[in-house]
Length: 465
Ligand code: PXL
Image (tube, rainbow, N blue to C red):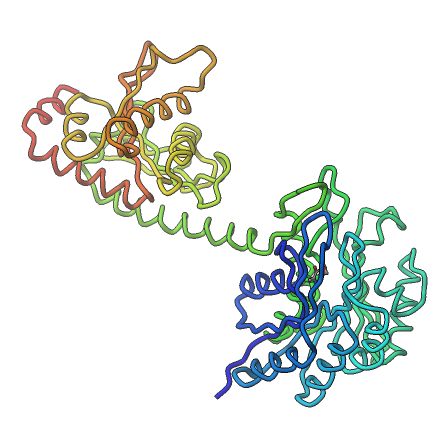
């Protein structure tokens, strides 16, 4: 039994932004099983291609045969094919096995370096174009294939018709390079269905980034996402829309390096997954907290807040917390809704802690009393800071948490579970309990409350308040 998979045939990009690496990251992000066949290995940095080592065409065939032994190819894509020999081998194998595929007619890297020899282009047009399901040239590639100079959307359509005359069934001309010509804020991808003689246009906003001249990996990412969507059973227009959204996110989340956006295929999907996981964990933690009636005793005047940061957190908006905090009611306490960006204090305490141990992503603030500190000291690693020593202009959470963590690291070799301060004029003293996630933090609260129950002196404290 062979398993289904999508296949990419292309070159290795040592910078990992484009090529086979971009394809595999895209396939992984979209959750499709995959296989890959390497045609050439490039040595490249963001500045350019230093060298290319071609894989012998016979070995490209071996790779294709090995892949087909295990996998039913649901859909394939081709990227950098480099030589006419390789184009011929890929054409032979795809023909023999009736492989449906997206032809991404990669010719040059963004730096201008050649990734397809001239005779290979001729062979690609002659042999691969007519058996492809979709061909996805950018403006430059469409010009090279069709011979039509493209400066307007009308000229892009004219080129698409020419490419169809060469045998292509469906042509998607990507509009990403058209802006300098059209000076428009809209990027339009043109889809031409040759059989129906119909055009569609997918419009989207250009993504603006400061000081950016170009992107690296966008073309490969688009064709890989398109291939995955087609394999999954999307109709062509919807597959193209998915691919377009996917590549837009990959550009938005890409890092800028030397004025080039290195697209990031996984950040957007991971961000959503991380945030979803945080909300689920927060819900569990809140449910557990609700069961702890005695938690009422631990709510400070300012209210309590429970927060948890997302794995990829950069700022307070990446930390979920309780909107409106946890506050006293007549007979118990009330917990607001869970929302990202709902806390400033607890969020900043967590973000500061994460600078020392990225795994500690959650905290709650509770009422200070010497008795609770004593219980914490029996159960956990505890550190403190003194507001009186805070330097002028410092932010309390950042400075306080930082100095307490540094003390704990020095004394215990680990970040603390608990950080307290005794307050100052107009500032309520607070205890903060940290943990890897919100459930662990609430479990720590539970352990404190268990100890409180066994602690006579605390009951007198409770009565007194
Ligand atoms: O983006 C086209 C491309 C395809 N394949 C490889 C590449 C590039 C661009 O740099 O390096 C291997």
